[in-house]
Image (cartoon, rainbow, N blue to C red; front, side):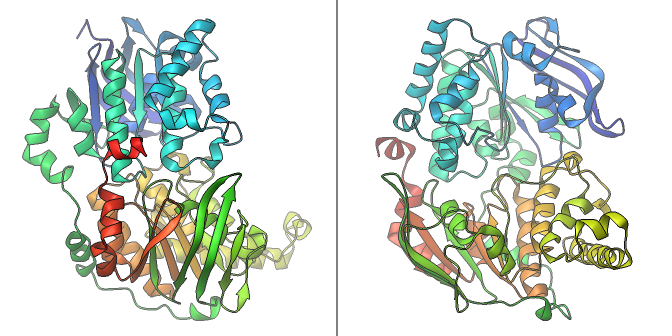
Length: 530
C-alpha cells in the first residue's frame, strides 16, 4: 500500500545476530485506522513494534531484511528519538512509568520533544479528558497508583507528544475485566480523535472489537490477515484466540496429567507455616489502600487473593514481604509476627514472591538469574569467592545443582544458557517463578502469573503451579484477575474490593457471592462514575 501511513515489507529481524524473530513479515496501517496484531507469546509481536519504533538495538536486535516506511520515509537507521518526533510513539508492555515521579511529572516527561507550550497544554488536557482519574491523582507518585491507573498513565504519557501512530503493547495486561472495557473505549476514542493505532494484544476478543484490520503472527510469520470482523468469524481464530475461559477448562487441563509426587528431601529444606493476616490497614496520606483486611493461608494450600484493579491486592503482597508497613494490624507467619521486619529478613523466613511486571536481569542467562535466587542461602563471602577457595567452589557447585533441579521441575533445562532478553514472554514468566523457588521458600507469593498468556499457556501454568505445590509441599498465595484460572486451582479465596475484604471461602462460595459478582461485572461507565 503506497498510500499507507505505515508500510512494513518483507521484514526480518534477528537478536544477537543469531536468533531469528521475524521472517518476511508484511503489514500496512492505513491513516486513521486501528490494526490488531495477534499471536501467542514468542510469535514476534513485540519485536514488530520495536522494529517500527526503532528500539530493536536496546534488546540487541537488528533488522536483517525488508523495510519499514512511515509517511513515505524509510526508517532504516533512524534514531528512536527522531522516530518519536516523526510521530510514532510506543507504549511498551508492562506499564513502564517513572514510579518516583508524580503523574504530572510523568506526563511532562512524555512531552520533552514538544517545544510548543500550547501544544503541551492541549495534550495534557486531552489526557485528563480521557483519564479523569489521572487528573484526580496528578500530584501522586506513579508507584502508588493501581495497576489500571499506571496503564492509563503509560498511555497518557505517550499521547503527550501528540503522535500520528500509537503502538500499544498489551495494554490490557493484568487488568480486571471492567478496566479492560475502559481501556478498549479509550483506544476507540484516541483513534476517533485522529490517531492511528497498532494494538498488540493477547485479549483477542477486545482487540478485534475495535480494530479495522488484523494480522496473526506465529513463530515470526504472518499466518492470517484480513478485516477484523472477518477474522473474528474464522474457525481458526475463534478456536485459538477467542475461547472464553471457564473453570471446567482449567480443571480439565489439570486432570489431563497426573499430579507430581512429593520430592524426597524437600520437607527438610523449608518450614511451611500458617500465614495469618490480621486486621491489616495501609494508608498513603489520606488514601486507604487496605482497610482492616484479614485472612489465613493454611500450610501447603493454594490461596487466591483476587479483586478488581485498585482493590489492594499488590499492596497486600507488599505488606507480606515487608515493602510496606501497615498503619494498623499485623501479619504472623507461624508463631512469629513478621510485621515491621525488613524485606530481606522476611525473605530469610522463607517467603518469596514474583512480580506483576517481570523483574529479571535481561542481559543475564537463565542460569545466572536463577542463581540470584540462591543468594540468601550462600555462606561464602566475596573474598573467598573472588579467590576461588575450595569452600566457595563447593558451595557454587551445590548452588548450581539446586538451580538445575528447580529448572527441571519447571522444564527450563534447555534454556539455562539463553539470555533472558531473547526469551518469549511465557518463558520469562516461568523463569521468574523458578528464581523465586530457588530460595527454597515455604510460602510463595505469585503476582499475576498468567497475565498476558493465551489459553494454552494459561493451562500450562496452572499445571506448573499445581505440580510445584505437590512436589515441594509449599504454600502459595495467588494474585490473579483470571477468575477461571484461580477458581480451578485454589483451595480457598479472599476477595478484595475498594481496599476491603468482601468475601472469603471456597471457590464455589466465592463465585456465588453477590458482592463478588457485582465487583467483577460492574460496567466501565460505573467505574468512571465512581
